[in-house]
Image 1 (cartoon, rainbow, N blue to C red):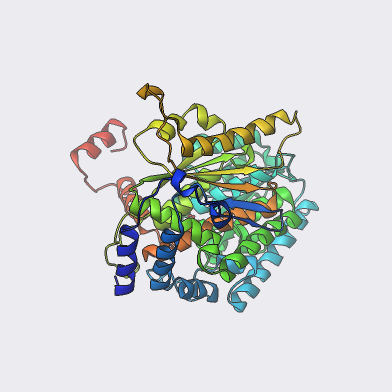
Image 2 (cartoon, protein in one colour):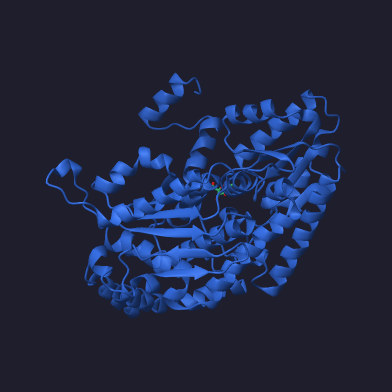
Amino acid sequence: MNDAVAAAWTKLHALDRPTLAQLFTDPGRLDALSARLDLPGGAVRFDWSKTHLDSAAIAAFEALAAAVDFSGKRAAMFAGDAINVTEGRAVEHTAQRGLGNPDSVELAELFHARMASLVRVIHAGALGEIKHLIHIGIGGSALGPALAIDALTRDGAMVDVHVVSNIDGVALEAAFKACDPATTLIAVASKTFTTTETMTNAASALAWLTEGGVADPYGRVVALTANPDKAVEWGVDETRVLPFSESVGGRYSLWSSIGFPVALAVGWEEFAEFLDGAAAMDRHFLETDGAANLPLRAAFADLYYARLRGCQTRAVFAYDERLRLFPDYLQQLEMESNGKAVKADGSPVDGPTAPITWGGVGTDAQHAVFQLLHQGTNLVPVDFIASIAPGDELDPAHHRNLLANCFAQGAALMAGKPGSDPARAYPGDRPSATILCEDINAATLGALIAFHEHRTFAGGVLMEINSFDQFGVELGKEIAKSILGGGATFDASTEALLAEAGIK
Ligand code: F6P
């Protein structure tokens, strides 16, 4: 840790700890900690006033950001420098949205043009009648598409998409039952085109097409990958391989050809709006300094709770059924990016890194897990995400009630309620942030996802870690391979489990 970073942390650890009630005696607090961004899909309000950030904390975090050269690192990411140092790669998901190294932006536009024309010819019937798409991918090759399709196709989709990730055949069988091989296209989505789950499912999907009477099953496969040679070697015709750049990380790849199922479901024009929404957030993140930069401000709060208040988890509740998969998506983004114990230079981190991200959908979660948030012994910072415009056409009472509940939870967590009966008392002073969108549409969703990508990156920079590798997932994969390969021996417990299951 350099001296400036050490000095910033000393200041942060020495901060006073006023309660939220005390902080709200400042009449300027709401204006200082909440902001409304005009974005292509409508305005979005980001309200961080119910967190414990105050001017002293923000000044100390801004000093930390300067000490770790946040602006320089942000510029390096947008310039296409190899900031993923452990893998020697650039980090160029923003180039997919039109911001970044001009060569990378140009390449992304070329790849998008290829993807757009394939989407259009499929819609026009060039591959025959296509009613269903089985999208096979896992992790970043599945979670983003699943979220976007679930959020944006509530009024129907141009093609019925089933996202299948798990190697458990139960998942793929369910998709087979819902589709007709005669009218189904398969997308094999894998950055590496080597992932066991995806390649196993892809082989079974080919067999299903063949058994279903499809004469040329490979003719019904589209590959979405940064390893096009491998896809061609596997059997996909080059004309149906949609490549993307190696510098787009798996969990940041929704904007690349991994977004193909989204574009097929909603149409290219709406997919382009999704990219535009993300680009607007990119511009805000790139052009705004200090705590006025909303993803950076959110990262300050995240770090405040993880490092200064010992919070081991953070919860995200979407008060909108359309965003029910948002917590799942965020889990990979945040935990795979920032769940690290060493800095980018290999030295141990100076404190806790990513908390465990969890969450759910409101109001369901109120009747299941909110007891712990209000009265439990864990302090959990909560994010609420909601939309002013309803996603349904029923009696407006539904949506008014939904929003009233969302805002009530934030108010209740903060205010608490004293009482003579300890079982019925609420301690209060529990933090939350609220993201209130004018509407949920493709552009807003793009902006929301990009906000979280940048928040995650900013957190990684402040903690001096590399948010873009994921070596922690490798050991388990290696052991699974050696189990299946035979010959290796393991601990007594594992051996007994393998024997009982008949695997060894
Ligand atoms: O195992 C983790 C991981 O590498 C993720 O980072 C990635 O999103 C996922 O596997 C799938 O990888 P691929 O797109 O190469 O199949």
